[in-house]
Length: 304
Image 1 (cartoon, one colour):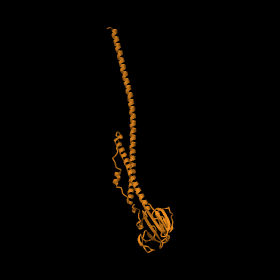
Image 2 (cartoon, one colour; image 1 turned 120 degrees about the vertical axis):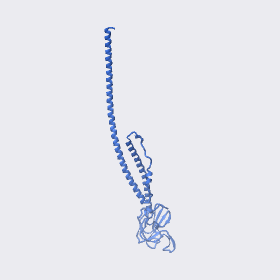
Image 3 (cartoon, helix red, strand yellow; image 1 turned 90 degrees about the vertical axis):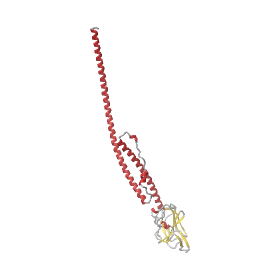
Image 4 (cartoon, helix red, strand yellow; image 1 turned 30 degrees about the horizontal axis):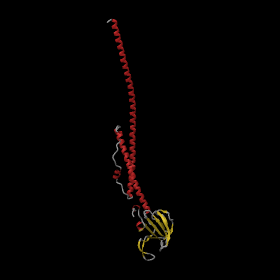
């Protein structure tokens, strides 16, 4: 091999080496650029994720504050509900209505706690607080529903008692002395034995006569025996009659209230002096009016 041939070979080797070095350097630079770009992207994404993390942490903090606020609101509502329960218990005790045991109230709002598993990947403490809040809200909802039911029952009983009191003849129809009681007696005019189906109360002519219960005037008339008289129909099967009146101060079909003046005591009809003949009927049967005088509202029962 000649000298020229050796020189050509060496030159080609140098060129090939330089080319390989250039390629290697180019690849290294490319890799470096890619690494730097990847690093920049990674850092950028990292900062963005950190921003999101900070936002989530801030929202979680606000959420915890809201949960605390809602728990305070529930506490306030529960206190008000307890006051309402105490008021209801007082009314039931005062009106002799059936009382509700505290344990019954708690049983009425019982049930297993509910767990929301959708938040199982979140902060365990926040998850626990959220589930406790959900269960308190469910407890509050049940408590309100139970109390509404008992209040509605109480209102119905109270309304029934009020209506019963208004419709039951339970006050004196006038002021005066009882001159003739209900039952067997000797008739003051004929002298014969008969049965007196009412109570006579004697006083001066013109003494006010009162409706002993609220109701509707069904009769305003005059007969030879009763003289001027009034008949009033009441709810719950009651009817009252007021006889021997001097004046009638209501009209047939008129609604009257308990204690309202409906006429004046007189001496009309079959009478020996100024007095009121007063009758109480219940389901078309005569009743002793004296048994209904001065009855308190809580003493009046829904009976036949």
